[in-house]
Image 1 (tube, rainbow, N blue to C red):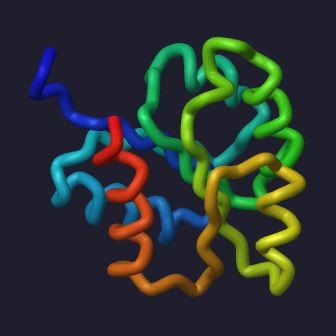
Image 2 (image 1 turned 90 degrees about the vertical axis):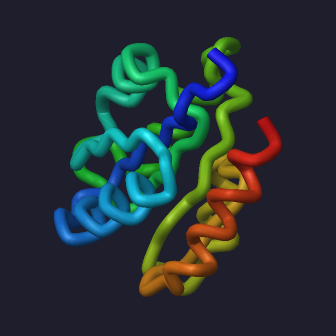
Length: 124
């Protein structure tokens, strides 16, 4: 169990971003699962058991803030770190409202994103 790959669950409706995340994080030794909608966040988290979640703000059906509020209400999932991603100029306020642990603005620097992800996944 010691060498289990860390798992990242990505919610974003932009296929290109999902592809880039999948490639980059897989190359860094992470197991990645992606979703283009967030309405089923609880089911996805339950089945995949991620160590980290990347959540886009503008995502179909219920949106990032609402999805994370659902997640944080569940005792067993409320401590999963979440990095909020958005092209919105006020991402800091959005991330705070969503109760995310950190955030990164689109378009993002891939090295900065990798460092941010590493910061959360190296702690566990």
